[in-house]
Image (cartoon, rainbow, N blue to C red; front, side):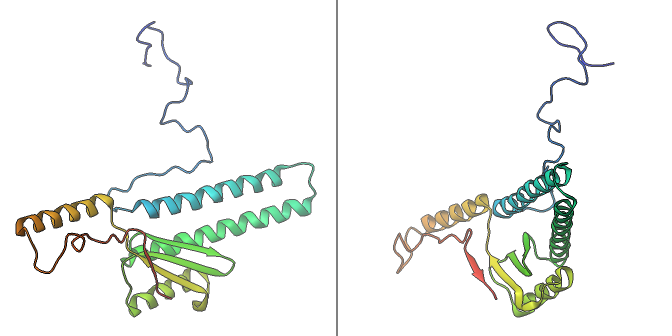
Length: 199
């Protein structure tokens, strides 16, 4: 049987007002958590922004396609652009999936105008890793190697960084003084968000 209102005792309709878990916008991007993989806020934010822009572009194109006052040539152009957007999204997703399967975590691949930009959450990349990334991007996206830009970025979670900072502070306090080191020398430099272009 259905739920009842606590005050009136009336049965509540399944068609009641939506709550926080209801889907009110059928075309909206819905993020789900992956408990097995920790992603940085930077990567999540970048992917979310990318998907929101795509959703807005698709909505605009659907408006053109469904507009009865436009001629068929304009509608055909909008359909072709929608197909192109979908193709790019599929190629980016395929490249990201394969890169993550090869051990590169928190990867973003962005394909625009025959160029591919790859951001990898790693402080530095070896020549072998760089070649592996280029090969995957070339195969999955069709972009030639000279048009691939790879950036490595070291992203640590804030709680991990705070934990490391606290441990370093505790170690220094235990030693009371470190010969040749001043108080300002002991401060760690954060690497959050610093990029190191590889190619």
